[in-house]
Every structure is written in C-alpha cells, then in structure tokens.
Length: 528
Image (tube, rainbow, N blue to C red; front, side, top):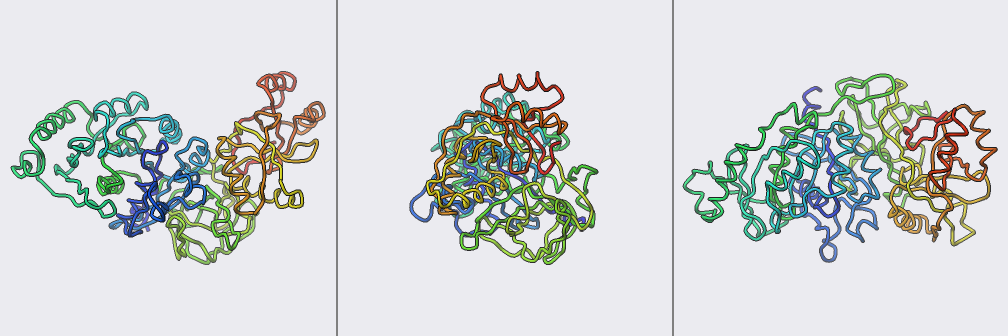
C-alpha cells in the first residue's frame, strides 16, 4: 500500500486568465494517453470545445469558471490533476480546490510575466505552504527576457527560482529548450500541435552535432546564458521546494505540446506524494487503513438528463472500493457508495477502487454538501475549508412568478455548491444573493435558466456586504430586535448582519461588544 500511495501525485494548476492553463491541462491528458486530440481553447467549430471546460458558459466564453478534476496514468504513476478557474471572480472555488491538493503548477505567460491573479493565487498557495512548480508558457511567441521573468518572480512572489530547462531563442526564433537536468537539447517540432513533441537528443553543449540544429548566433547566446544560470541562480534544494520557498521553472509552449513531458517528469520526480490532512481532533496520515475523505467541491447538474449532483471527494487515507459503506459524518448516517466515478473532465468512469490522494465523485441528490467528511465510523471533521463573506450582494427576481418555489430550490442548490451565498432577510419576502466576484451573477443567471428553465433578473440590493454574527444567543436576539431590517439567516441557518457601510459594522462592534462579526467561517461549523 505504501508503494501505491508514493506513486500518486495530486496537484492544481493556477494562473492568470489566458496564460494557457486549460491548454496545458489538455496536453497533460494527451501525454497521459487520456485523450487523442486536445481541443484548442479558442479555435473553430467543435475543436474549440476544451475537454476540461464542460459548462455551457465556459465553452461559450473560452474561460474556466469551475474547478474540474481529472485523473490519468502517466508512466508508472497515477496523476490527479485539478484545473482551477483563472478568473479572479471565481477565486473562492480555487481556494477550496487548493485545500484538496499537495502541490501546484503555476503557469506564467512568457510575454506578461507575473500578473495580478497569479499573484493572488500564489498567496493562497503560500498560506498552505504548498510546493509550487512553474511553467513559463508561450515561448513560441514574442516574450520578455528570461532573466527578467525570473527576477520578477523572485521579487514579486519572494520565492527563489531555479531553472530546470532554458529556452533557445524566443518568438519566431524559438527552436527548443536546453534540459539542465539531463544536459540535453530538446528541439520543438512545429509541424502538428496535436501530437506529442518529438525531441532530438544532443549530449551537452559541446556536442559537435549541436550546430546542425542551433544557428550560430543562438548557440553563442545559449552558452553564455547557461553559464550565467549556473553562476547566478540557486541550485535546486528539495527542502526549500517542499516548504514553498523555492520553485523550479520549465520553459515551453503548451499549444505546441513542447516542454510538457519535462514538466510532467518534474512533477513525478519532485512533487510530494499525498500528505497528512488536519481535522478538528487530529492529523490523518495517508497510510492509515480506514478510509477517510472530504468534499471540496459540489457540482450540480453535470448530467442534464438526470438532474444529479456530484460531490468531489479527496480521499485522505485508506483503500476505497466500490460498494463500501462510509459514514457521512455530518448526518451520522452510513451511505453505501455504489456508483462512485472518476473524472476525465466531463467523461466519467466508474471508480472500482481508489487510494489516498485520489479524487472520486459521489453522485447524490443533495444530501452531500461542501465540506462534508466521510469515514469508516470515526467522528472526524476535516478543517481548512473556509467560506468568505460576499463582496457583492443583489436581490433576485423570478420573471415567472408561478415558478418562485423552483427558484428557491435553485438558489439553495447553488449555495450548497459553494458558488454563492444565500440570505433570507427576517423582514419581507425574497432572497439576497451574495458572491465574491461580480461575474458569478452572470454564471448564476445562465445556469438557473439553463438547468431549471427559469428566467431571472438580479437587481441592486440596498446592502453592500454581509457578516456572520457569533456570540451568545440572547445577545444575537437583542441585536436582531434593534436592527430588524439588517438581519438575515443564511442557508446554513446561521445569523447574518447585512451592511450598507463600514459605519454599520463599526456601530455594531461598539454597541454589542460581546458579539463578533465574521468575514469568514469554517465550512460545516455551526456559528454560536
């Protein structure tokens, strides 16, 4: 069992929108033999349908708005890869995804360097001390100076960078990369983007064959730059990498399938195997025999015909087999997991068995929620899955009054998915919906219409933000009596204070010193 766990790698891919993250994901699948042809993100007709973007809106806009999990075999290892939304409006989904992985690949655009969303997502990884591998993409286009990019990563992200490969030329002059680990030169084949890049192997920079492939002016520059890399940049240090203080960097072109194999090999060689996970009572070790796991994502209506809901579960220990009875800790009931699935984007396969580090999907009709824990009997609750206070609030109106009950069902479902927060004001009718990023309202509107056949309209709310109220129930009742128009209950039945201005928050803190107004809460933790 120990050996099986050691061969598993579970990681997320993070980047700014358009850095090439989804393309890289597809090429990983291509190398793993999981798909025969990668669907380019912005191409013509059917070929543009990316394998890892399965929601209608994602396919229309060419962006990822939900995290999708994919598993595949590569060489003698088993890879669990999670593609995250690059758009900042969906960073909460990304944050939760990062709780389910053991390392991350940061994708950087060679022309743009470290962009705003990359920086934000990197900070999230840093909070969890995740080891990070870096891929500098789009080297076949005009890009910035390589040393300049490395300096920027080191300065903006305060992390040491050590190159594992080095580009030969850039833009139209880009011909390949020098592999610093194996002292070999890999030449990019531009002929067919959908085949795995073929590499011509040359032993070292002094090999006389090198002049056949590298023009003289590029060879001279390459030799000088490799000299500088070896002299100026730090050597790879595994301890620093594992603690999140050093990142190895590879250069390549995802769209041309170049540099992908070296990066995947790097993941196998350097990225950590499944790690221990914290719970409220103890740490769970992956080598423990009993099966445990937690739900880091819920995706509803993945199968339009069956109106189902799939809970993505990260297994933390044990050997899971299909048909097992697991304890659903929140409800304290045992569930028979008879039809678990593994994902290849939207392609599902029945999971006959799975180990610590793997991600399985459990189809259900709403009884499993985000943050739920599973065990073979132990009362265990995994921690580290936060809910953030929304930054944008709107009221929602059904354009078909006869279907308002359906609207409530849809809103509760999306709140349980973690896509939005749902607040029911204690005065008046209607709902207030809160999100972290404003684009989420477009996605909600699109999904409510698509999945429930309900046309809705979001309208500006009188409130701008929300805070969860924590404290003695008598104090909360006193607060509610004095501020009825501001009070609401969320979908977890926790008390919420809706605010218009920062002054509202300051006033409550002054007048009710025994109460706390929280801007985050732990998933599945009752606030009292």
